[in-house]
Amino acid sequence: MSRRPRSVWLPIATALLGVLFAASPALAVGVSVALGNSPLAVNPGDEFDLDLRVTDTQALFNGFDAVITYDPAALTFIPAAPPSAQQGCLMTGVCSAACGNTFHIFSAAGDSLKISDVLLCNLVSVSGPGQVYRLHFKASNTQQTTHVRFRRAGFYDAGVRINPVTTTDADITIAAGVGVGGPGATVRGLTLRSSPEPARGGVLRFAIGAGESGTQTLEVHDVTGRRVRRLVSGWQPAGMRSVAWDGRDDGGQALPPGVYLATLRTAGALVGTRVTLLR
Image (cartoon, rainbow, N blue to C red; front, side, top):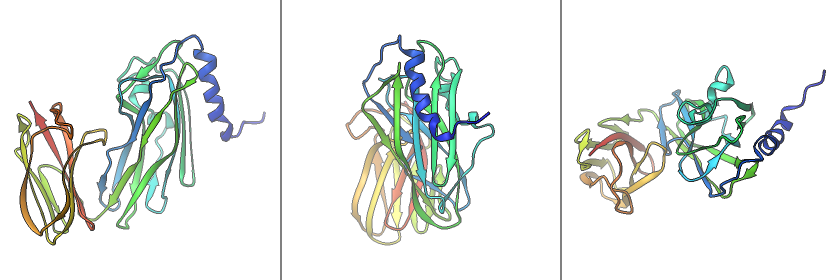
């Protein structure tokens, strides 16, 4: 018996969305999906996960497909066994109301990864925020900045494509001695420390410094990789100084308690530290 080539499975999965769920109305209010916590800093040879995470809370969907690209000279993709272990908790029902019965196709070839994941439950849809997929990579031993990108992504509800779909790619810096931890780290003369840890009342201070003058960017990201606050951007002198953060986002709104990632970037280095806000 002949087998269908893998290339035909994505359109078949899309067709299934309409056949199986035609009775359910679609909410085409848009989906935002991000790859991991960007920017991400890892050491040469490190293994790490990149989550595909829906970051909005409005759209309902019962399936998605995506093509992800990366540079195989900088990153090695490590598949899970079985591939179904790569499915995110929104699709498996671990962190959602999904029934856990899915049509799931995954393939890896060259520099691209193809994903199709559809809930096979009549009239069942899910919404974000949350994880829809997980990819595992190993960094090369060459220090560099590389990217993992969406070539395309589509989300569907009841067989109807949801528009718009907004994607956020991942920027990954591979650098020896990269510090992403708490309460601080130093990398190639670039220092980032926070206190207190945890920060009660949502108020903390960053001690930041560089061995030479130049452009510096200090930003805070949430666990989905979305930037919530930019504290420093522009030319700064060499040396140490203190920067306060009141636990608010760029719009002045108080952020919820939780773990955040602060990153300090210059032209030649990147250092990060996790901070915890308590209210």
